[in-house]
Amino acid sequence: MLIYIVKHLARAVGVFLTVTFATFVVMYGNGAGVARSTLGMNASEEDVQHRVVELGLDRPLFVQYFEWLGGLFTGNLGRSYYTGQSVTSALAVRVPVTMSLIIATLILTIVISVFLGVVAAYYGGWIDRTVQIIAGIGAAIPPFITAVVLVLVFAVNNPIFPATGYVRPTDSIPGWLASITLPVTAILIGSLGASQIRGSVIDMLSRDFVRTLRARGISEKAVVFRHVLRSASGPGIIAFGLLVVAMFGGTIFVEQVFALPGMGQLLNQSAQAGDVPMVMGCVLVMTVVVLVVNLAADISNSALNPKARMR
Image 1 (spheres, rainbow, N blue to C red):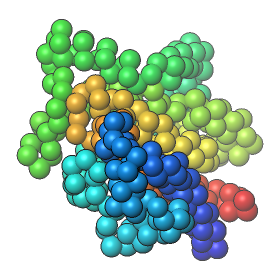
Image 2 (cartoon, one colour):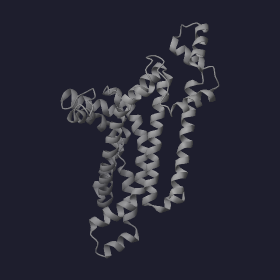
Image 3 (cartoon, rainbow, N blue to C red):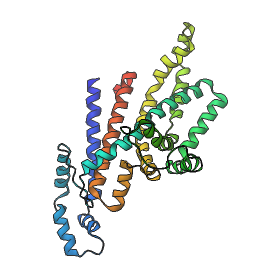
Image 4 (cartoon, rainbow, N blue to C red):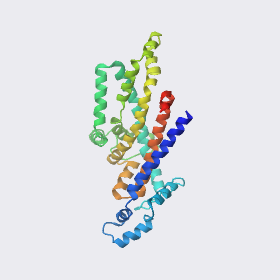
């Protein structure tokens, strides 16, 4: 087990370095372009070259990247080209907002997907078809469209929830729940993984060990939830890990609709303005979270399914 964890941890580090370096090359590769974006398109060539030197963009990319990488250990990710704000301090304010959406959505996705997947696989028939249709429609609708519809129905036409804004849980738990209900729902609708759970449960229900357990007189509830669901959870765990990537993509648009001061909004605004240090900071956090979640999913899967350790 330890060797398995070390191997996957090394793989995660390799993916992190690859993703961050590729993003760094794309963002900083054209030093003159970056400098011009901070000065305006009408800036003279002399001013641009001076700005390139001022920002340190005239140095080799590898040197710049490893300097940025070294800043991770000191918490120094640079400063915004436009506001002068520390990237670390900006992320410290924005990340909790986005992570509250991601965590709440992930928990609800797991609970609802497992319930719907088990029900659809066990009962089949019209229940199975209904669950598949609901999951298919939800996955086909972009979170941005879902968010707009939710605002119109539950905030404008029926003012049940706030249309915009975010209340921190330290200020008011009920206010926080009200402010994230619609954003979480918008992301959740497109994230249900009932199909993966359904397929795995159907496969396990047809196995010989299930018939043996039933023949021994073990209750149907114990067979399904203690034995079948545990054996079928492997593919579902991996799928939920991958869903985190999609959830980050959804938050970028959802935070714009609901005017939430999260990382998705910061990334969108920074990318439009060409604020490279802020973009790199957002990419860093998203990459780390996705890798940690997927590493946890791999370890959980290996604990439930020892055969997975052979990969």
